[in-house]
Length: 187
Ligand SMILES: [Zn+2]
Image (cartoon, rainbow, N blue to C red; front, side):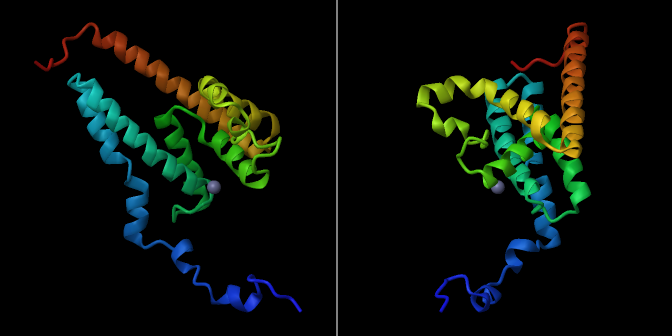
């Protein structure tokens, strides 16, 4: 006799609906959750209030991580195609390829904390090694995705890194251009 908590009858009684289907208002909230933080951060940076701007950017980043994770599992309430495009957009705003993060995150679920789990690799290190490795972590994720992911993911990773490079280049141009103009100063 099978005495499992996962019998078919029991599983069928579970209401999964709340996990799979979002209302229209929830979809909109999920997609735009980070936008207020990003907008306020840009305004504050424009008037040279850099510390509050950095705090708002931090909040935007946290919202982005939530959105990305939902995107990795196609739980944003939008189509797969739109989810891929949304991850691309978030990559350019968070300056890291979200498809590289996606690949590593799905591997983390599959090989949790074993040798193939690059995302969880810091958990096998001493605390100070994990901190020192922090800046290299995004590079490790990109290299692993480019080496081991399928061609579709690899194409996204390349496109996202190219777009990030373009964003940084345009930012540099804007910096140079702004040095020729006087921007409003905050007293
Ligand atoms: Zn996950």
